[in-house]
Length: 90
Image 1 (tube, one colour):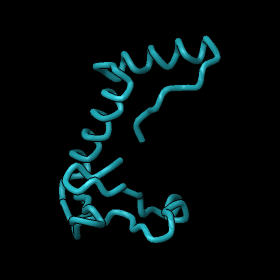
Image 2 (image 1 turned 90 degrees about the vertical axis):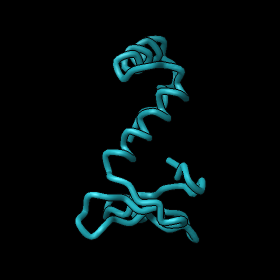
Image 3 (image 1 turned 60 degrees about the vertical axis):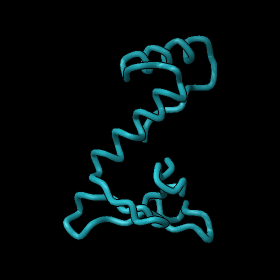
């Protein structure tokens, strides 16, 4: 996931993900109330729901589908064919 404002790659700061953040990169931040995510580079701040919707929109566009149901069908067909699974949200 990349910030739509500055293009910085977004990294999760949770205990399970923090070790995967590359050297020199910073994970995103959270607002004080815990409801918003802040870009580590430009400080664009939006609700976690907004970021999640953006990520889903990007995955749908990359996979040339218009819904999560259509994406699930595409993945099922690829798995049946033994192909590498398609990119999924999250």
